[in-house]
Length: 228
Image: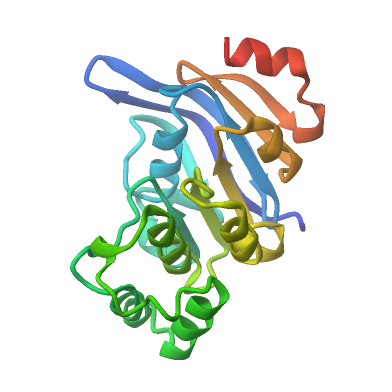
């Protein structure tokens, strides 16, 4: 980690109709560090990731990624982002290989990178089947390949190990774990495991900050209150 900030949030607020999903959220993340975003379903975690991914606009406050304000300078940061969302963002009628080659062309990445990733997650032998015929775990592995294809500087990981069995979890660890060597923002239904791989933690409750600080400083009592 150096002194550069990958993310800086200042009073971030987002509404959906009359419902406030994020309210006055402030936090920062140094380059190369990992932020674990915690909270119950509906707390605003996925909305925060979508704002950082330039898919949603904040209604109030500021969000900066590598010093660039969103959404005004979104074009300057999109190539530095890798998003793994609940939606795998894959074309179901294309094969896994075709999906990855399509994204490789968008990012001007050579097809050898596609083959390297498919082999790393042990999907090279199933990569010529349409995505719609693959199991959820296989689709998740292809989606992880898509997210890291262009070696992003910031990974946005929404439940990244969903649908993965333990063996697959081991395979993807070098791609989306600490070994990825980039800044990461992650959410997880397993707060204990997520905190163990994070540097910083941000607890959200009904869209507001319940706590923020070092991940190793989050106690059992805080987690119990957050998920009560």
